[in-house]
Image (cartoon, rainbow, N blue to C red):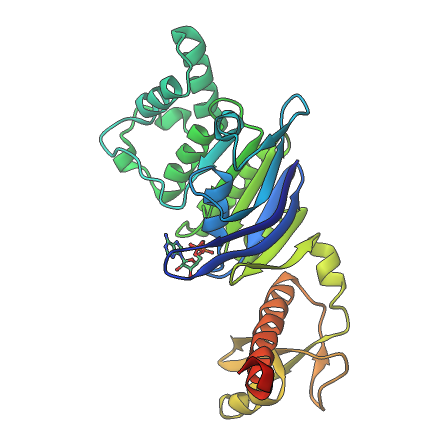
Length: 311
Ligand code: ADP
């Protein structure tokens, strides 16, 4: 559906935001998981044709099976794309209905009757029908994001890109929003960028983890979880001993349980007495990939220092 090859972008300040990205994104929900600064927004903005890449290619399978060059044929992409940016702002004094109608005109829906049908249908789909006359300034965060989805769906896009949409939503709003995305994902490709592991766990049949402009893993969450079987170990430790464990083991996460730290450690055998095996989850996968990348970076730095040829 969407094929990304060797995509790279370096900003003027020297930050390598995208470093040789390769991804295949099928129909359905695709989770793009990474910490702040990973490069998610840079990738989303590039896919949304709002930003230039330095090199690489992105190909979108069009409605009639044609291949659209996303980096060059921007108008064709925009006709098939819906985008909810990270900083989606609304006009606070305008009602949802009026603003959506306005966006619909901009999308080229010039016939009044047809436009009304589309706008009404979308307001119902995102569950804002009863609140359609209210000014957007009175909306909760979750309602605003659902309005953002309605505007992204104008024009029947085949690809919907949503950038960190659940940040700042309370658990109930988050669930409601994610369920809406899942429904949409039944028909089109939805790329959901997030730093929240649970956003991906329940909803996304395929995913990628990225950090520092690189893809660290791509595939099915369950495969990635299965690959860590028998390698995640848990132990409750004292706060005083925590730094020692962090120095001597690959500690993936630390959680306070009843006031005491419980650590998850990645190791192919039991690290020492007192560790018990646990079934891995996506959070273990996520932190394991980030740790391995950090270790690789540290190793490369020391290797470079030791290598007289690189001086
Ligand atoms: P994410 O969405 O995962 O938080 P971003 O794509 O926003 O990541 O940022 C990736 C990196 O690129 C960060 O180091 C960020 O500071 C940097 N960056 C993002 N936008 C710009 C820009 N317009 N100019 C310079 N650096 C940028």
